[in-house]
Amino acid sequence: MDDLHVNADLENEQDFDEGTEEPQQVVSKKLVSIEKKDKDKEKDKGTKKRKRRKDVVTFCAIDCKYEVIFDAVREMGWKIVGKNADNDGGKAVGNGELPMCHIHWVDVANIHERMRIMQPWQRINHFPGMPNIARKARLAQNLEKMRKNFPKEYAFYPRTWVLPADFQDFRTQFDSNGKSYKNNIFIVKPDAGCQGRGIYLTQDLEKISSMDSLVAQQYIRKPLLIDDFKFDLRLYVLVTSVKPLRIYMFNDGLVRLCTEEYVRPTSENLGDRCMHLTNYAINKNNENFQANEDADDAGVGSKRSLRWFMEWLAEEQGEEKAEKLWRRMGSLSTKVIISILPQLSREYDAQFKTPAWANKSKQAQQQQQQQQRAQSEDGVDGA
Image (cartoon, rainbow, N blue to C red; front, side):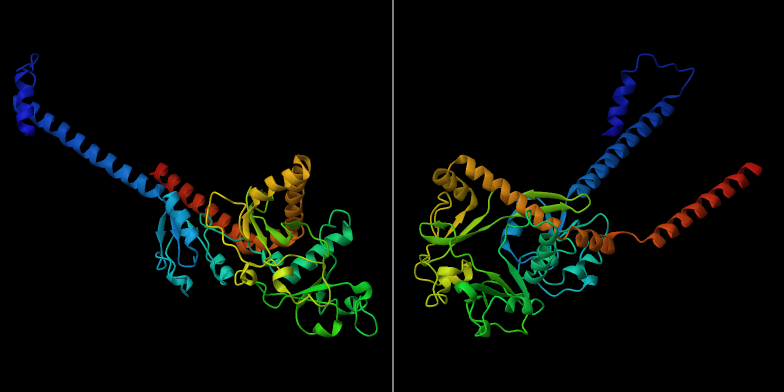
């Protein structure tokens, strides 16, 4: 078909000079031109394919355990790689078996093991040093350090003791019989506990172990209530940078309510966990637990949305107080992160920053390469 097109072009050629070029030469040039165009098209197609391949973000799902993360990845159009691409609950996989990816999501305990192999162009969903606030004892210790220096700014949480380190000071809150002064109540939590396990309220020192790793706080007797139920708020804060510190607070979250109406705490009702503790794992099995079956109605049930809460608070207390509380929650979140900022910065550098000796070695290699090129160029000029 190409020859037919060439012949047609030759027949229509009006300015052909028989004295300058032979018809066969013209045909040859035409064919070369056509072949070059075809090659250019194939080259363009290959370039476009390569560009398209580079634009795909790969997401390693080996250490990912939650379906909501998979849904978000698929919605973003990213490519899921790894043996756990179907979300089978996570697998124990060594670093040598990990696929290359742009984003590595980790929902399991071996976070620091994964961090050690991260390349500069890769991203991971954790910062080194975050256990300094994720663990209750470390959080309390860091907040207490800040409160000693900035008592007014860090007065947003009740008095706290880390046991057994602070046991002697904590002992002064009780009389010689081990009963709390002024009938004060203390809430005691295991350092590494979760889902409400091991949490209890007490007024007796003898019920508190002096050897276990615990955090004790003065219990707030008069909390704010919703429909006569005690509640807590779960805020979602995203840290995207340590140097400089950059924090974003999501404009929604969770409100978790107890399933037993709150009454003034006494020695008789301290064991009523569904009245005092807001943990979902504790309240979900109570017969009064209300599941929200309508996603559009965020103000119903034992779990509600933070947006609903802010609207409810504005109606109950006024817009001004609601806005003030939102600003204070943002300030509180920032202060908590600031309390561990030195550790965050130090551990980030230790994990990811290239050591000075490596930079010097790289510079020496670059200088050596430049000298070799210069010598090579001098040799060519001399020849």
